Image 1 (cartoon, rainbow, N blue to C red):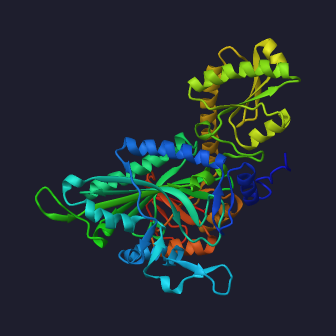
Image 2 (cartoon, one colour):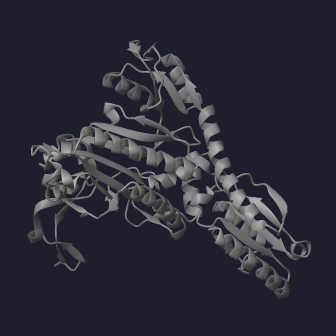
Image 3 (cartoon, rainbow, N blue to C red):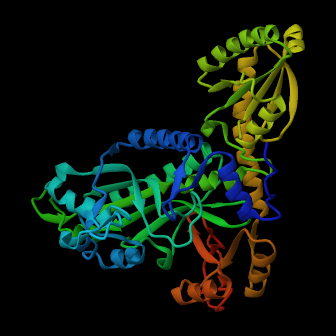
Length: 491
């Protein structure tokens, strides 16, 4: 194996970047700010997609696909929306190339200028709502529950693999409803789905909350979010669900005839998660030896490594390994038998540790004689010798235990790194020495929020949905406050 990873304590950012590359998750591409997601990384994303897609469909949503290109005029129709995305848009101005008359490759044909520029999709509200105008006429057409799996482009200048790239993959749900109450219920339902996925699949504890006006999605009435805490004490927004009110319906004249024959604007929502979840998965659980993957999202849940001296021993071990594989596959567990003789067992152990395979089985000739196998778990790095009899059931229970253990470890970390403060002095001290989530009173004004952000680089991550009523005073202005909000420095 190559030299050891940088440690998290030495340089968290370098540790993250190196881990993404060495674990074969992704790499920088030839296109500045964009990434290549490698097969191992993409297989994790596929598992995420599959689980989320099932959840969406269970709640009545259908998948569709909308254009990558959006006419510039569409973004002008909803003022706050265009203001929110204007600085991140990639713009297509021409539709043809031609050979350079000077013999220097190809150039943009100046005669092929588009009548109207096209924006490469930063998000799809505008193009989707322009389509909904044709799909919705009556209350019978509602609710309209649509999801799209797609790529988007937001022209980021400072990029980091998975966390912030110019192009990334995501899903975006866009729904239309006959009442405000129904749209708000949809917004909250999708937030709950994201939280369930994060906690039950990613083993990632999250705080559900609502964004402040300053942090709200451009064009939304309210933005709900799930916030997670990374091991370096920074927050990461893991998913958002937006109540759009009638803003986009009004902008694109999407009306429906209600049961009384009256024309009304529909009510909308949008919600999404992206490949940023890959970054959250890595940063929340992994250690200085490599990835630590929750079994539910691991591409390989169990790897079997043979320990042998000759071909005869390998054949006997392979036969037993095949039996184990069949038993585990019947339980829906993914297994790899690594009999590649180009690498020694020690190399393989290090490789699968780096890649975060939850369970490693090592079988040698002596194990066959004794009817045992060595079982190593990635999360705790502990090993034990176990009887081959009933091994499938043992491993199935072990994987469930690992999934729960990873979640509990992350939850304990969040609890240890959540601090209540009552003064700005205390706020700054915790922020600089400990980090994590800080619970503090805020007076509810955008001005105070902006001043705290300017002075500390900490933002209000959310107003927790389960925040208890508690009279206090704002840590910055001293004005009255009725509940604490979550502050943190964030990605």
